[in-house]
Length: 565
Image (tube, rainbow, N blue to C red; front, side, top):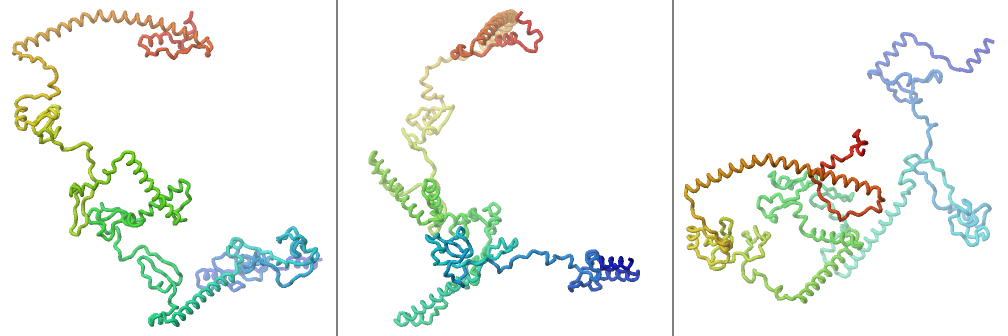
């Protein structure tokens, strides 16, 4: 029985437990691990010949004894297992296109499509045009079978690959087609040269010309355009930030109050030489706006504005999409606009006349002079001038009448206007010159309008005694007035109180009437109440306000319920 039990246990386990290491072996093993971690000893190699990192713990690198104690330390059991990994289709696998062209069927087969005769689908799935009599009954025009498609297992990237299933031979066909076209061009050009040589049209210098050099990339390597490099092999243009030989915009004028330079966009819109007095036409750089508002940019902006306005009115035009149509439409619009203005002008002239005044030559030609100040340089260029003219009055200026040398309003005294030349305050009077000035200085002269008033009686000057007597009389009058006020104040106070009591009594009676009237109205139906739109509304007096306060019923008053008793 003991032999049978031992045999059964060996059959179940089939493995021996690892032998216990001695103390000396354990010490040597630890020293070797330390040397490997320090890099003094070579790293341990697994069964596949790969080095094992000495810093990996033993419980990760060693194979458990109950699996296979004879195996050396390895990391294979930590890596993905090939048998457990999903298998995906390769990059060359794809669905087959078209139909099978090898075998040609001439007889209908059982189980095939009744419409076309193919074995790979049924009648309801047939993509061919439904025949009047199907291939099942005619037995002719049997369609070839489609390919039996493979089941592709695509991974995440394979499902999203744009070029999945692309055949590179398709691009090769395009390359061959272009090469044939290029070859045909060269042969045609060579034949044309031969014909010209035979006819004698070409000169001796042109005969040595090599036609192969006449290519679109002939001068590609010799391009020397500022700010860009051209690569003829890749056909790309690399634009630099700026030409290093050019002066930077912010170094044109070092004055901090000059034109603003935006470092983010590298733009300087204003002229940096505006404060120096230099003409923008004479400097190398006059700001970004100088180039923006010159040349065809203005007409371009006008065309764009016309396109926007035409689109708002229902015309389908666009500057970038259809520039030719927009240009023709803009030209026709200008012509129609000028014709309309001319017709409107002719209609006004026919109705009101005055065409002879519009055809008059300019004042500069009539008088051979002008008031505009213009300053020219030595070369004839305009330096200063041609500014906007100053707005003038619609009335005539500097018009002198009646021998006056100054205009009316040039002299002012005591709130009146006059002429400065003679100090006359009368408008449209005749000038008296220095005689008038002397007369005005010796005597007080009143204006003409003031002289029309009735003359006042002049009072005779009073003596000092009469002035003193008048002052004493005024003092006595003031003292009497003060005494009368004191005596009358007591009597007036009593009278005022009586009047106030009478007014308050009348106000209380009026308030009672008003309250009764309001109560009566509240009892009547609101549709039958009278309309008081013509009743006069006045601000309440102090007595009426006091009566309202006295008669008002307060809800917090404990004696409010006894008021009506």
